[in-house]
Amino acid sequence: MSGNQKRRLLFTDIDGTLVAHDTYDPGPSAGAVARLQLAEIPVVLCSAKTRAEQEALRARLKLDDPYVVENGAGVVFPVGFPGGRAGEGEQELVTFGLSYREVREGLEQAARETGVTVKGFGGLSVEEVSDLTGLSLTSAAKARTREFTETFVIEDPTSESEARLAAHLEPLGIGLLRGARYWMALGKHDKAQAVRYVISRYEEFGPVKSYGVGDSAGDLGMLEAVDIPMLVQRSDGSWADLELPGLMRLQGIGPEGWPQAADAALAP
Ligand SMILES: [Mg+2]
Image (cartoon, rainbow, N blue to C red; front, top):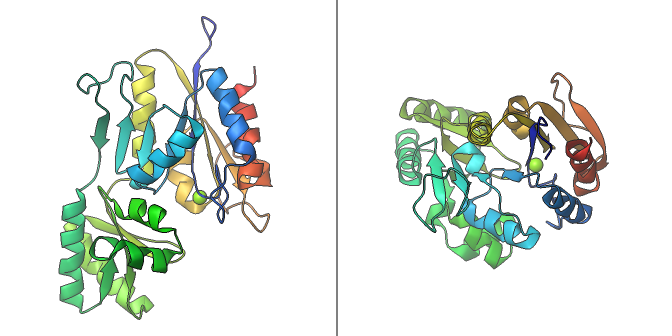
């Protein structure tokens, strides 16, 4: 890094962005991650996935940069991160939301009050999570290891039962996100706050230029918080319907388009 050049950081969503949706395979993005590592540009994972889920991917890609877990509920700084607040040989975990126990208890309370039957991952066996999600048993175990947020299904969901549940969670400081197959109950935190925090930690050492790449509306907070927002194409070839100043729409579905995000961060 030359004297007056800004330090660059690349934030990335995982599912459908860095790795393919169905296969979870990084494909061409693995080589692009390696190029960024050679250039000492941190690749900061930022997704709804748990720490255990992200650690598996980090090991596979040999990543040793901070990462944002469970939709911005926490940021993990690796052992030895410069300026780290953790003890010797320890990871540093910074949290922004409620604890898993608070979210789970709130969800149970709201379910009781509304008579809506919910099944949270925390109350399911690994086999049941695997059946529900289509994940392998190993992956289901990692998805079930939650620290901040609860993923759940509603039995016989209707828009009415969902709204009732949301109304009872709101005063407890718990929000609801709807995914493709399940819901997530979470404290009032978002990816934008966590991304800004990571940027601020790097800014302790000098000016930063931040890049971010995602594939869906769920990545909006991350993309709003960075200098250069980018989208890869979704599996149908379209881009998520987001409008942001300077948004770059990359050619290529998920990890096929991801190397262009690396190129942008590597450009002179
Ligand atoms: Mg995604």
